[in-house]
Every structure is written in C-alpha cells, then in structure tokens.
Length: 250
Image (tube, rainbow, N blue to C red; front, side, top):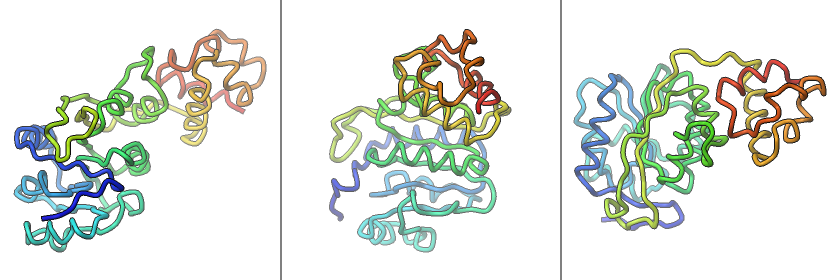
C-alpha cells in the first residue's frame, strides 16, 4: 500500500458517499480540462479518470503516492505532475477546473495560488478544514469574515456545499471538514489595482478591532479619513466597499 506522512498533512478520503457528492458538485458545471490537487490514495481519482472527453492532470508532491497511483490506475501515468501545487505554473493554457481534498497545512496557500490563476480557473470544488471553509464563505459583519473572505469574493462567487465528518478520512483529522465551490464572478468590482486592493484588505484586517481610519491611516490622505466609512471596522465593509476605497488611496 503506502504510508501516511504527517509532514504533508495527509488525511486520505475513503468515504464513497462523500466522493460521489464531490463528483456530483463538480459535474454541475461543464469543463474540458481538470486538475486534481493532491490525489493521495486516489479516492477521487478513479471517478475523475472515468469522466469522458476531458483532459485530466493531477499534481502530487509525494513520490510514493505517485508510484501507488500509477499501479492502481495505469491510465494516469502521463497525467501526473510530481511537484507541489504551490510551485507549478498553470497546468493548462486555457480555462480549467480544479478539484481536490486539499492538504490542510497548506490549504490557505492553495487559495492564494487559485487567486494567482483566477483568470483561468472556471470552477474549483475543494475540501477544506471546516474553519477555513467558513472563513472563506463568511458574509460581512461576522466574526470570521476576514482577508480570505474578501480577497476570494472579489473574484469568485463562493458556495458552502456540505460538511464532512472526520471519520470519512484515514487517519481521522482532529477537525471537521467542508466542501466549497468557487465560480468566477460575472462582474468583478472596479478597483484601482489588484495590488492596491490586496494591500488595503490586508492592512485593514491586521487591526480588525480598530476603526478603519486608525488601521489604514498610512494609505489615505487625512481629508478622506474623515468620511463616515472610516468609522467602521474592517469586518463591517463589503467586498465592493473595499474595492471602491482603493480609488482614494495614496
């Protein structure tokens, strides 16, 4: 078989019902090119290889799992990328879909990778630690609404699909999990630049308990800081609020 590596955050999905729900969610939107992130023991991979008329690739950093997958699914041999998802270039030249039971120790970094590829990613269906999934999907005004919520929702619509019990995995993680879906926003909010937007959001939430004017005062001229919106806290601003404010930044 194979060994499980704690250093890689490996918790392999084995529940067929959960696998089938993920595949069903994935196939609600058409796609021609698909990347699986972290196939591991191949719980999802067998279903994905059976989808007709698509180009499939999988990225897996663990060489032992690569060898296991090739033995279990010979058809996958030339479709595997033996690297970290965080280090690769976009795997296709045209729009593609992403699916995976993401390693929880790098799941936030994977989200930022997806944001790097936002102009090519047409859908993402992914398993996250429940707490991370809730943060990404959180609406404004809630305690868990934060940097991830705003940055992702500027470019994607986020759906919180379903939760997964820890016993669906081997070994069971100490946390519950949840599956969420990203699909591109039909209209992105106008912003001065993505760099300004990212900077504003990160700066605002780094001091989320303070009024906005105190947390971001270095980014705006004093006269702008007198406007009413700057009396709010970061968690009270919508994605569109943040985008609009970028036009007033220094």
